[in-house]
Image (cartoon, rainbow, N blue to C red):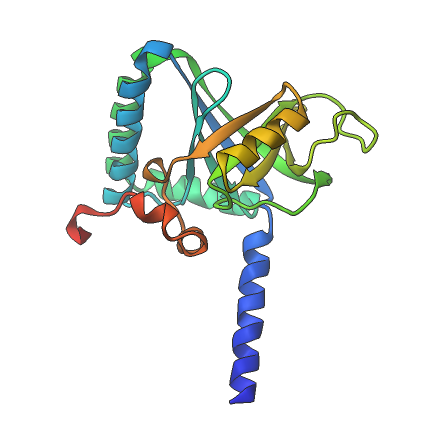
Length: 228
């Protein structure tokens, strides 16, 4: 009995470590909404997430909505390696029904946007990261800094969070928060390049681990209609 208990504890420790490990590659897809089209844009995002569930999207992703600054929707994908990134791309190509449905969604979104969507891939930067590591699915809110400035230890203000960098030198620093008040306080301390985003379960395709970390929050995630 004692040996079995030890195995359970070790398994939980390994699971916790896996959840805390930041992704090596982070895809950041940004949509820029026109101020008068927010309600319509939100509705389409819900439809898009439901389509991804019904047509078996091959990879989990996280949907965010900006709460400060210009209104935007962000979608985050995490990859452990470039090989996984390539594999996911190939799996999408094997699902033409999904691609066709998502292209129709994009066509509906375009008139509601104030600028073209932006999609970038950023590499994890351990040397630029401070504080507890963040991984996709942690936090009901995310405090996000987007900057090209120096993040050396003596730079001001010092920004706590997990850092990723694109090829053109743009840095994304992510810090999770449980409440809006906590997120606002962290954003204020980090400076003007930092914004607060809300995680939107109904725009996301979560993993089981994300749901297990916060089941009550993820109850509004999209599910297959046959399972309802």
